[in-house]
Length: 354
Image (tube, rainbow, N blue to C red):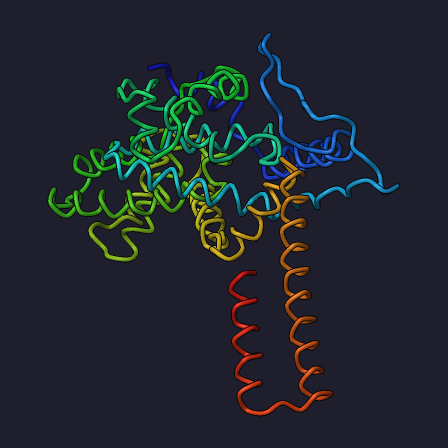
């Protein structure tokens, strides 16, 4: 594998917070403009391999359908976080190595630095990212196996493969914090008096911390080595296994790093703060936003939903009018007990027919 220092991961895919926000805002704005112009936001792959909005020009308010409400930046973030969690769940269900899971999440994050979830279905992109991750890491799982394992159409996985590759600029080599955790654990074994058993426990704890970090913006902002160090420090603080502060103090001089100890601590603190401030998606919010997303990608669904509600309302109104008529009949024409029972039987039969 190529060296991280010369990799595209370091040169192109480590962003500043400002770049990250601007990329997401630009993608969101493009989707909003497409919704206004074409009446839908979904992007489809054309026969020649190009991507385009297939919808017709949007209809205005002069007697035609109204446009659905687009997703906000905050709502897009909720959807992305939700499907990043799904990547971890699918990877666990298939017993994929951490490397597969992390690579798929990084592909997913990178793809949606260029596109909005309103333009490409995040569920389909999620599946394709997992499939590509398995191919790149030489962990063979066919599209059929992946689709059947999670009850999804395998063709969806293959259909979006070129789209995802283009979104990643065909730059598929990524470096994950899990491998860096392994390297630091080995270094701790060599340079400290920590017991091997305790260090293995620290390694497992740090891997769980990395799992949570992967569901934030941290992997797009910091190199995997710094993310791994932050995870090890957090895991060691929760249940001390080694004198990690002393290890960090000696690291800059021993490894001849450009950063001082104070600068290193500042970076680790910044990572901890981002992880602490990250919010995980709430199920009720995901459902609400997913409904908006479906309407943006296919506004016809909104019209269908409106039609169903109108039909139900008409049925409800019709039944209510029937009840009022029966009450008026009783008030205007007093009936004996047998006649009342006869009317009620007739009403019940009418309800059953409806």
